[in-house]
Amino acid sequence: DTAVSQTPKYLVTQMGNDKSIKCEQNLGHDTMYWYKQDSKKFLKIMFSYNNKELIINETVPNRFSPKSPDKAHLNLHINSLELGDSAVYFCASSLTGGGRNYGYTFGSGTRLTVV
Amino acid sequence: AQSVTQLGSHVSVSEGALVLLRCNYSSSVPPYLFWYVQYPNQGLQLLLKYTSAATLVKGINGFEAEFKKSETSFHLTKPSAHMSDAAEYFCAVSKSSGDKLTFGTGTRLAVRP
Image (cartoon, rainbow over all chains, first blue to last red; front, side):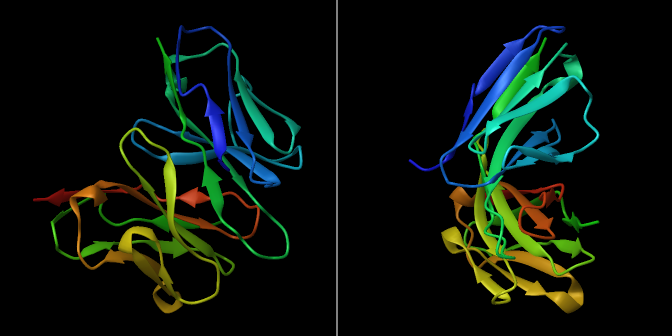
C-alpha cells in the first residue's frame, strides 16, 4: 500500500524520558512534515523537510529534534519529555514543484502520553 | 500569513438534512484550500482540495465545496447527511506547493437519527 506510515501508534512514557517517533512514506514525495494535535484537536506545524533539508522550524522547544536520513523518512526525537508534550503527532508528506500543489497525505498519528 | 476561520465548533444536523460547514480564509496570495475529515481516534483523510482549477470542487463521500474569492470562503456542503458523516472536519490553507498547511480549529459534526 502506498502511504505515510508512523510508528509507534501509541506511546506511553514517563516524564524525563527520551523517545522517538518514526515516519516513512512510499509515495515518492519530496517534502515531509510533523504536526502536533493538542487535546483541543488544534493542529499546528512543527517542522518540514524538503529533500532532507530543514525548511520550516516553528517555535518548538529544543527538546524536539527532527531527523531526515533520506527524503522518504522523517523521524522525531524528543528529549526530557514533559507532561505538556502529551498529544497526537502526525507525519505528512507532499510533492512539490511545477507550481502545482498536489495535496498532503497524512499518517495515522502517534498518540503520545507522558505520565 | 495564511489563516482559516471555521465558524461553529459544533454543528448538529438530522440524518438526511443538508450539511454546511463554514470556512473563511485569509491569504496574501492565491490560496490552495483543503478540507480534511478526522474520525475518532484516526488520522486525517483528504475530502477535497481547491488548487485554482474549477471553483466548485467535488470530493469523496458526496461532499463538495465552492471557492468564492469575493467572499474569501470555501464552505463544505453535502446534500444529505448520513450517520457515518459524524466526525471532526478541518479546513486548511497553504500558499504554495511544499508550503505548510495551516489548519482551522475544526468543526465537530454530529448527525442525529
